[in-house]
Length: 114
Image (cartoon, rainbow, N blue to C red; front, side, top):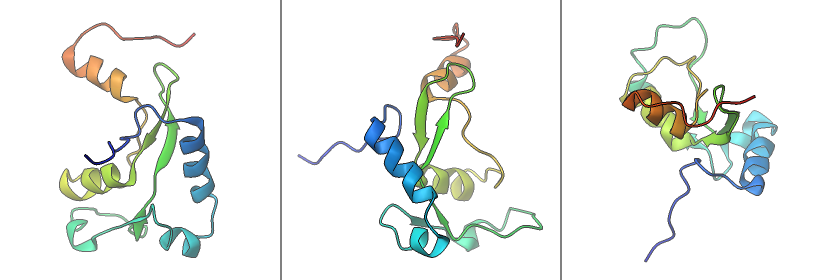
C-alpha cells in the first residue's frame, strides 16, 4: 500500500518550514526543485493579464483568515485551480479546508480566531 499523500490540510512544522524555505530560493533553484510543478501555458489562455504567467507552481503556506489555522496550498492544487478550474491567476488561498467546507455547507463556522 502506498504512502498517503498530505494534501496540505494538517501540515507539520517541518512541512511548513520546508515550503517556506523553497519560496525563499532563487527562481532558478525553485524551478529545478522536486516540489515544483510545471505550468501548462496552453491551459492558461483564459488569463488576461499584463503580467507574466507562472512557469511553475510551488507549495504556498498560508494562515486561514477566519480561524488562524496554518495550511499549505499545494502546487498540484494550484495547477488544478488555475489551469482546469480556470481560476484567476492573482487568486490565493486564504481560508483553510475546514472553513471553506463549513461555508459551503452553510453550517456554523468551526472555530473563530480571537
